[in-house]
Image (cartoon, rainbow, N blue to C red):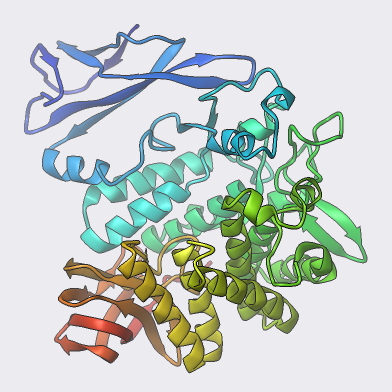
Length: 518
């Protein structure tokens, strides 16, 4: 396969290999090409190959020798090869939004392996390594945003802005961003709750980073999709009395409906919608969003006897509960993570909205997960630490802090790293843009969030770990200035550095300047 791209500027004739080539201080570097074949659904991955680039005059010729219908390659032009290589090495491959964003749908085959779905029951268009286009933006948001805040490497800023623009360009009139998700692949126009929630969060973070009002408008536009019924967008299931259950997706291959409309009522994705509406409301962006958030909260409360087991476990969906029985967490262990994800989402929404019933449901699920980890039945250390941090933030209870630090210690001793910063999609309350970076040794860090005017960070190290807490400033004027640091526990402070020798609760006094909201 051979394709060409016209270049502007002056280039010498050359063949470009892995090391790259160019002029005027710029290097052209071809990255791995991913080759796909197609079926009636879309592409599926065949192979990975190294492309060969040839520059002739102002034309760049790209050649691959790989099987499949086509290959997807990312070509980079940079004056900072070391910075680019370092940045790309921290990102997943292939990278969504830059490459075509195709991934094997591991969920389908994990379900088959677990015996949840028989391979013979799958539609004939689903093939091993089947791919889907996932443009939701959380990969760019979580990985690239974190690295931009912590390193100021401009490559990450370029990746973020590329992602923001791509998300805006893919929105329909209702704010929906299509995704050819394989589990819903019978239809061409697919929308999903994770998609819409991550688009909202990613563009909102984009506005906070850049100050570009288009990203804030796009974030709010993404929420409209939840209230536009299929096939126009994602929509909801009407439970009556003003209660809504926001759909996992508008279509699903397991649905009994001949059109594939999704009625599986998935808990964690419903809560993603609830939390997105909630965050828009508490940030003062959307006054009517509280109505949609509370409608979804009351729906969870009404159906809690269906979704929550007596020990606190939260089922993934009513469909999975019916097909796998009450012990789905033992039959398909990844659902344990979904239970804890639902707990975390519900905790955040309940804290923002001051909703005691939802908080109680979520707390029970979190504590159930804690005891299962402590007793060696589960291994979801980070997920339990996340929900415990929210419980402690809400209650300030010393027992909850002890449980949180205990989880960090056990994970450390088992060699499981737990690093949860405050600026990802699903991290600390209100998204805390306060860099706290490990510069020596090994340590566990989890942002608890703001409490009583300070940012709290729970930490653990076996000894000799050093953390630096820095100021932060963005293009939008959003910034954080550190005024003081205190450590309660086994640690010491010197300037803006902390040395850890065991369990500690770090308290950061800071001045925060938020960007102006429209």
